[in-house]
Image (cartoon, rainbow, N blue to C red; front, side, top):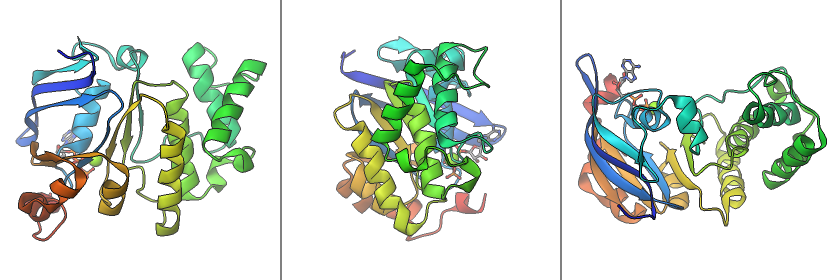
Length: 256
Ligand SMILES: Nc1ncnc2c1ncn2[C@@H]1O[C@H](COP(=O)(O)OP(=O)(O)OP(=O)(O)O)[C@@H](O)[C@H]1O
Ligand SMILES: [Mg+2]
């Protein structure tokens, strides 16, 4: 196995009752790669993300993270190996400020006891300040999360995932709930914040403009299978991708 591989999936299978969410999924993703996962509703994208984080265990197959099998590990242990994620719906403390959310994320890494009460020591404040700057969030530092526009909330959720300096960052629909005006500036900010890092980024995305612009590789899922794995231009031009993902023909899972 090559030392440059961050995530290696093979033979992954997962069923929920009669629904096949993963059917023999296999691919390698290199350190530093920026990959988008696409597919219609119910295709198995979030299930794959959940298997990488350990929240869902496959029925068969294996996932290696930097060469180590993670499928028997607990989510916490996998997180400690360097896997961080953001959610389809941001998981933030609505009644805390932007800065306090970041401080809580930083404290959560240091101690499980104090994570509900953001620590205000010099180091934590400096780390939070650095991340606020990197994500263009300084002007929002004292605002409550409940008052933020969708794009800023998403940015904060991603910034919180990056406080761990992860090896792998999983973004589940980073631009969903973000207005058309906000989505490109938001993704520009995320990509700028990641510039120069070897963090492998996997993002689940329904917006093909975002896929084409921000990923260097596209993996398309349909009914728990990989139906395309190529550079964006090639993958998005494939007939099966047009048929089952980008919507030239409505797929049955869209009604699931
Ligand atoms: N915990 C679960 N229990 C039962 N069924 C599940 C569970 N998680 C996912 N599924 C089912 O597995 C299939 C794949 O779901 P998944 O959430 O991975 O799709 P997705 O590609 O992320 O879709 P979307 O674009 O709608 O987010 C769906 O049919 C879904 O209903
Ligand atoms: Mg999903």
